[in-house]
Image 1 (tube, rainbow, N blue to C red):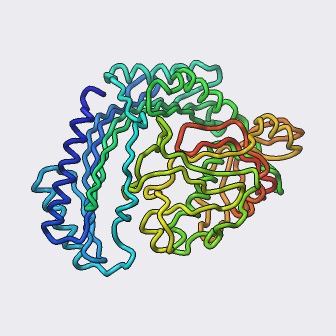
Image 2 (image 1 turned 135 degrees about the vertical axis):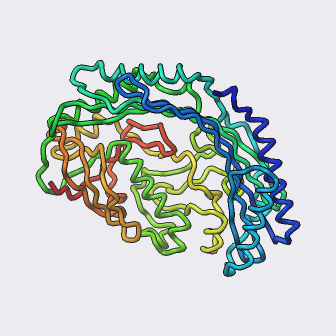
Image 3 (image 1 turned 90 degrees about the horizontal axis):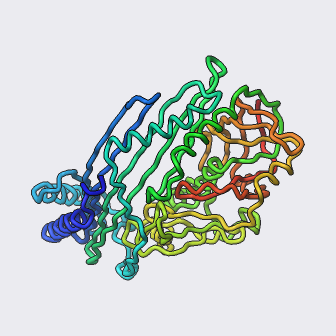
Length: 445
């Protein structure tokens, strides 16, 4: 698959298309213009009980154009890279801009903030897989899981592999492209039967196939996760210490980042409005991003506005040190961009990590949350109430699985009551985090 996609040729083609769009906007009389273009090539296969369920080979192209006429803005997009289609797309964006209302904050990021350092971030690692090889890998993953005693069925295993190029250009003269790859393997299994049936999953993802965990390990861990959930019990309603497993803790970090994002702040749709400089978490906790990390899943030399990325520290010793801002949201708030158009990149926690077993051993009676259901988070008030499943802990040991309960609190209070972060760090996504121990939340059985 990697040989079918020539990244250098694709980048040159996309840069030429972006440059053509910028020139067309200039000829129409636009005050400014920005263009984003991308091309992806990928393969995805899924098997269930050894049989191939899906095989997808896809190549996608997208070109988005934003045109500014004074303080008016218009956008249009196309999946056709021909000059005629690009001219038509630019003309549509220009016409939209002429008739939209003025927005005093509209416009490109400042020219002086454009990136100029484009170091190699080691993001492009194509995986030259033939379809038969991909199917074999997915089958091996599933077979490793279904071979574990107690597994009764499978929802399948899948493999995904893709490469892509993205280009961003604007009328400041900025025009740059990046190439990247992404690979993953996953397995979802079933144990038990009828009303006592349980399911769970495991997966691995990375920029390079060399960094994936072995597919046999993925299948076996999916089996272990599934078997651990058998014979769940109910939990008595009360207030307990809660350990949020890494996947759930990552969701809490996402809630925090969403609350300090410029779009939520200028709309006054965040429970963290006007909290810059306030203590939100314990002093031993800091949160930062590392956008130029080699092989990072969200690494980039520049953000979606073309602004040079940098190492931002959002929480410094528990205090909210800065917001998460694009050039537009920064202008709306009277601040400067933090190079976060497109979100935070490679988010990391700085803390004295505790051994996971020590976290559990410190709890006399409490709950480990390993799964969440529903969307019960109020971004404006911070109120938090979600269905959950996990494990009951008593006298420092896991006793049995539990399900069918609700965990409720308020995010502002939850952040303040964070007691420890575990060393069981999940590194499979953009946000890396271990388990979070929050000292006291309402559990409704």
